[in-house]
Structures are given as structure tokens and as C-alpha cells.
Length: 243
Image 1 (cartoon, rainbow, N blue to C red):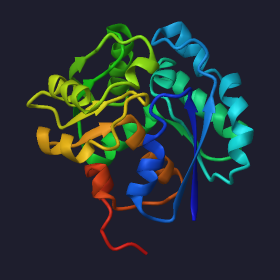
Image 2: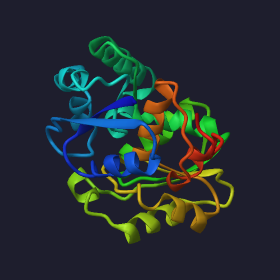
Image 3: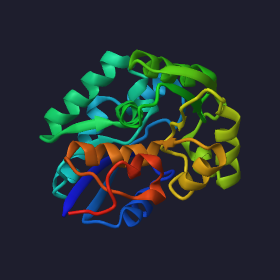
């Protein structure tokens, strides 16, 4: 059994995580601890407070007691808002506090993109344009090319959590460009785990979503690789036969 730990801000799309655990269908356990979201706002100052070392540290002890082998800060905007260097410092601090390997959803996207060999990326964000632009900058700093960036102007994670399949598909299709190697949907407040294969069939290319890549990143940190086609192309890099 491999235990994966996640710090998830507030309550929006956390039910993606037990769904992903079921879809993986292996000896993987997902443990999720909710952190205090503070002010629910996709605004730079609020996001900086939400991702502070003090806020993350409050959830670490509970997560350590689960026996987690790695921890991922399951928040994209609350990590990339710090910038490339600041996001590195955020996960370094988290790793020291937790006493285990650590990462964040922003770095999960970077590593997942590299795993797929994707260079040109289309981004469909729920965020306001200024916050979405910070994610695009983060990807650019990682060496990727952002071919298109679509913001949705949504301020709260609570509102994002109400979106269903129709809104998710519309966001992905509106963001996609013909020259993009993959489409990224970066908000962990967005329910996507049930839709990834259908999105990929619709767009004809890999789709990376926040909760999907967050779990994949935790698996990467623990040295586990699984084949789970129901979670999209990212989870088909490993042969079907598992040891």
C-alpha cells in the first residue's frame, strides 16, 4: 500500500480524489486534509495568504498521522502566484515541515507536460485574466509555449465547484488551438476526474486537469507508476501489466 497525502484548500471539488483513487484501482490510498482557505478569492493577495507556509503547516500534522509518504499542496493558483522561485521555496518549506517529499499542483503540471513531451500548451482557466496570466508565465518559465490562454473571470472557488460537464467541455474547447500539444485546465476547484477521456476524444489530444496531475505528482514523488486509461493519456505511459 502506498499512501499519498494532499493538502486541499477549503471545499469545492475534493470528491475528485476518492473518484481518482477508485479509477486507479491499485494499492494506492489517497489521504486528503483540508486547509483553511481564508478569503475565497482568485485575487493575488488572497492567494498569497492562502498558500503561506503558516497555513500549510497547520494541515501537515494531521497528514503525517495518516502515514502519507509524500505530500502535494493541491492548489494551482495558491502556488504559481508566488512565481517560479517563490513556488520552489513554498514546496521546500513544506517538505521540511512535513518531513517527506513535497510538491504542488503548479509543479505537477510542469512535470506532467514534460512526461507527455508537450511543448505547446493551451490553457483554459476559471480565473480572472490577471491570475490566469500568472499561470501562463509560470509555464513559460518552465520552458513551455502557451499558444492560447482563456480566463473565465470567476472569483471564488465555491462558484467553480458548481460547474458541471457542459461548462468543463466548453472551457476546454474554447481554450484549445490547432497547434497546441495539450490542453490544461488548472483549477483544483473544478470537477474534472469523470470527464478526462471524453475530453481527450473530443479534442484529439491530451488534457491535463488540476486534480488529475496532482495525484500523478504524488505518485511520481513516491516512485509509483500506474496505468489507468480512465484518467487520460498521462496515466497510460506505464504498461498495462503491473507488478
